[in-house]
Length: 340
Image (cartoon, rainbow, N blue to C red; front, side, top):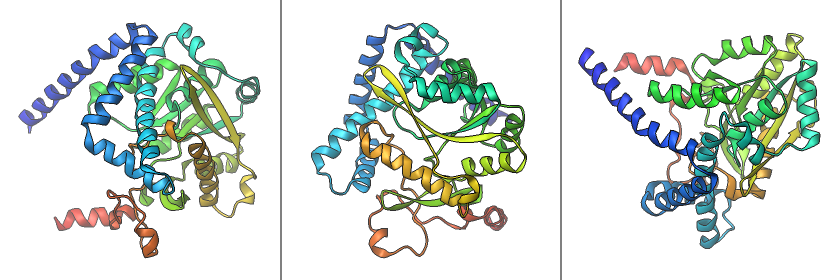
């Protein structure tokens, strides 16, 4: 076991070194070279990585069955370009106020809303989709509007990369990172301390981990109940809080946030699922308007609900599957391990 652990640690460190050089080179490059690298990377992946291209095109055909092949290919390429641009641009900007000033635009009405919440102690439960530059949304709130913010992120298996990408990169932008494993306690601690929370709305959260099935593009997809649950926690404990849906859209190298609010107070929704459904509907609205800026390489339609109509089941892409019992219950996973 010790040898195995040692080899894995060496492999992780090797991966870290491979990433480290381009990471710091990107930070030293002028922006036009970064953009050129994005174009080259997107071109190579689209033309050489067939599995990725297959997922992107399948997702677009599922969400937009009325569109022709030419539109799907054109939008897929643009989406891949935007994904690389989001990653490299974020690395290039971090810790550089001069670069942020060149790229980030904060409309006055959004500044007034965010800064007003920060000044009055209202916690913001940010809801953000994988659209435009989702990484930039957090640094706009923290660096341009003065919001103290923490964001929930997945732990990267490689501990060296985890520190580089989450602690060094994201926290350099003023965002505290809460790792998804054991996130509940940390999140509540931050809310009580007056810090706002950022969540991603369009992730495949299992039902056993707090997910729910909601409608998106006429399909059933899973999403986390976290925004509704956190809002309810604040409401039940007398903590002033507001749910704000935000997305940052790209126009060239300029990034500009958009903001929306829920239509009702918490008590007017029948349950938490209804809140998440409304937030998902807002996401769909933006994605339909800016499909080329959405993250289509993610397996968004991964889980097929049980007892779904055959005609709807046939619409799911090739990678979709009906989840097993572990998807619904931790007890099922424990029992399965005992059987093995």
